[in-house]
Amino acid sequence: MKRAIRCDVAAAMIPDGATVLIGGFMGVGTPERLVDALVARKARDLCIVANDTAKAGRGIGKLITAGCVSRLVVSHIGLNPETQAKMIAGEIAVELVPQGTLVERIRAGGVGLGGILTPTGLGTEAQEGKQVIETPQGRFLLELPIRGDFALLAAYQADYAGNLTYSLTAQNFNPIMALAATTVIAEPEAIMPIGAIPPDGVKTPGVLVDHVIERAA
Amino acid sequence: MDAKEIIARRVAQEITSGMLVNLGIGLPSLVANYVPSGRGVFFQAENGVIGLGARPPEGMQDPHLTDAGGGFVTAVPGAASIDSAMSFGIIRGGHLDMTVLGGLQVDEQGQLANWKVPGKMVPGMGGAMDLVTGAKRVVVAMQHAAKGESKIVPRCTLPLTSLRPVNLIVTDLAVLRFENGGLALVERAPGVSVEDVLAATTARLAVPDVVPEMAL
Image 1 (cartoon, helix red, strand yellow):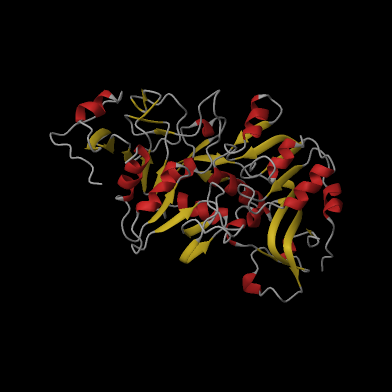
Image 2 (cartoon, rainbow over the protein chains, first blue to last red):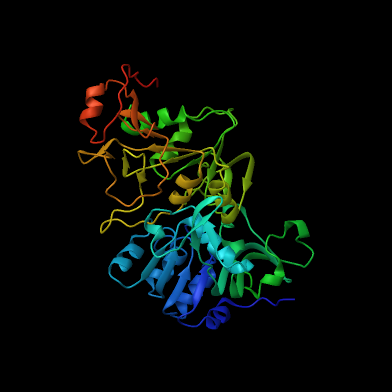
C-alpha cells in the first residue's frame, strides 16, 4: 500500500545533479505539479531524459526557463527556442537521439538488456562514436541503455497499490520510463480505491511505482 | 491553388484504401484534408495514436488527445492509443505503409536531409530518422526551391536523415521518383513546363519523352 505524498516532499527527494526521466510529449503526459515543485525548490544541474522540452511555460520548458537543467537527452527541441538558445550559449549540453532509439534505450535500461541494435541513424550524425554491428539481418548501430535516478510519470488514474492507467496520447514515454529508474514517482489525476482499476486496465503495475503524488487541490 | 495546396492534393493521391500513414508536422499534415473519407485509411501520429481524426470544434478538445505537433485532434472510430515503444515498433518494424515528411534537401541518391542546418537551426531529428528508415514508402512533400535555391541537389550538403533513399518527392513544380539509382521527373505541376522544372533543379533528372501534368 502506498500513501500519497505531496509534490514538495517528492521534489525534496530529488537532489541537484540527479538524472531524471520525465514522461510527456510536447507537455502532454508530463507531471506538471512535480515540475512546478522542482522549480519551486530551485533544483540545479539536473540531467533530464525526455522526448522533448515542450515550450516555454509548459512541462519541461519550465525547468529550462528556471535554470534547473545542465544536460538533456532528448529527440526534439525544435518547438522550444529557449532550449536551442541555451544549447548554443553552452548553458545546456544536449544529446539528440532519434525518438524510436530513445524509447528503446530507456526500455533496455528498464528490462535488463545490455543495449539494442537499430538500423536507425546508420550513416548519419547519429552514428558518431557508436559501434556498428553486423548480424545475419544486416548492419545495425549498437545503442546503449539509459537509466535514471528518478522517473517522474504522469498517469490518468492510480490506486493505493500504485497501479497506473494512462489516457490516450498522454501515455507516450510514461509506461516505458516506469521500469528504468531507481525511484519512480507517479503523479495521477485521480486516485481510486484498490480494486477500482480492473487488472486488465493496469498499464503500469504498482510494483514498479515507489511513490504516488496526492490529488491536485 | 497555392503551392501548399498543390503539394498536399498530389500527395493525397498516393494514399490508397486501407493504408496506415504517418503525416509529419507542418505541410505534410495538410494532406489529410484531401484524402476522401470512407477509404479506410488510418493516420498515425507518432506521439501515440493510430486513427487520427480532424481538429475538434472549439470547446470539445481533450487535453490528452494531441498530434505530434502538440495540437488538439480527435480520434476516428476504430482508433487505438499506444505508447512510444509500440508507436516506434510500428514505424521501425515495417508496419507503416507510408510516411510523408517535409524536407530541406533531397539529392540524386534519393537521400533526404530534414533535421538540422548546422549553426542555424538544430531542432533535432524527433521521429524522422526512424520514419525514413522503417516506413514501407517514403514521400517527401516540400517546396521545390527555398530563397531561389534548388532543394533538389546533386548531393545533400546538410546532415542526412537516413541512408535509405526516399521513394517519391512532390513539390509545387513537379513529382520526382527515385528509380534505377537516380531521380526521374514523372509529372509537372499545372502550367509548369519541363524546362521550368529543369531550370529550378540543380540535380540531374531523367526526363521521359512525355511528362504529364498533375491531375489535381
